[in-house]
Image 1: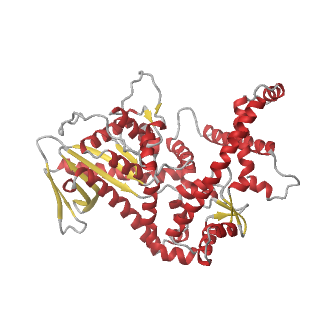
Image 2: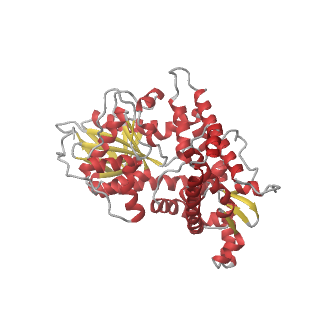
Image 3: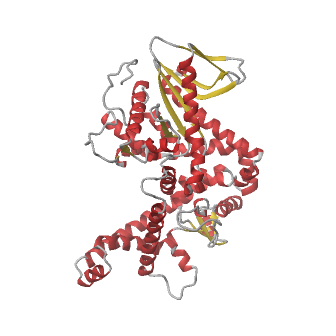
Length: 520
């Protein structure tokens, strides 16, 4: 925004009060837009839960899902590298180039931002000392109905906006000189910046309000001229590189090309294979099975991953689909997408459960029924079934109150609820809870609080952090309590391990659980 003001040839430079006014107007615009939009769609108690989910999902994604860098890099390289020839031919850089350039930009901007943040902190402290007890300042705050703390926060943010025009700007020639790039590397850098940039005035046709799909999510750099680029969302470059690269394949998706089909197949196989391998590390090779097919009459049914452990059968569906931004904005489109991500895998698990419980012997084969992979015979006691939905879409805390999903028809009341878990979070859970008994206990705790609908968190790792600290997910509360939100502090130790290589958190005390005890 600061760069926008400067590049519009103002008669005088933008000053502190200009930015403060813009900042306050933006806050008011977003607040009014979101509040009015939600209020206009509420009629007494006839609330469409999918509508609320779509709005909440959009806000959650704006703040970026929490994925550790090593996880994201492995994922991006695994599913996009097979198409390096296409990316190099069409865009002028490979996936490795994209990662290297992103890291260079992010590291460089971080160093500059940290330096300026220290200066802003000093200036903010000076402003506080100068104006906290100033009579004119008190009069100004009273007239504008502001607290001193609010004004100081706005002042600090305004100071950042003022320096953003220099801090977040990349000069192609200067950066090439600093990095001592040869001509080939200069072209790669230039192609990268052009690919992930838009210009002032670029926008999707359906963009009407701040909550609508925005081109800045896919092109988070603003191109000011052929040599100058403003990186207004450096966090998006690093944390959502997979989304940016997939957007580069939009034409292939629209044309339903052979390349797009191959890409979706690779992504789907990756999610299933990783889920399978992670589970085998916990439960052992002989207890975990992938791509099982069973036959009901002439109909062939599939299970992505099945774990057979003592008297428990864990049924996993691994889904690689994303919910497009446009679906997160409009509830009707969201409902269709949730059918694929939630309802279909849930029904697949129900069908598998019915098949196993309805037959004295259940047989599972490979795809063409030439090899029998698994036979399950009924025992003297009933199997306990647990449903798990692993998805590349971060569903977060919006599925804690499953009664809303019942209203949508996604789940049947009184049946076994699934545990929907973000793919990257699932890896961390299995990496930390390597004992199968403890993992099953955690999974049952997650399903239990889903059923209760009282404890919520927007991040699976907050649940995991609380569980590691307390050995369960139980919180004492009164009968009339509303929602209890877990603080993000519970995941601090996990972040320290996966970001800073500190000691991995462990379960506090051994669980006294017998393998056959269903009430564990």
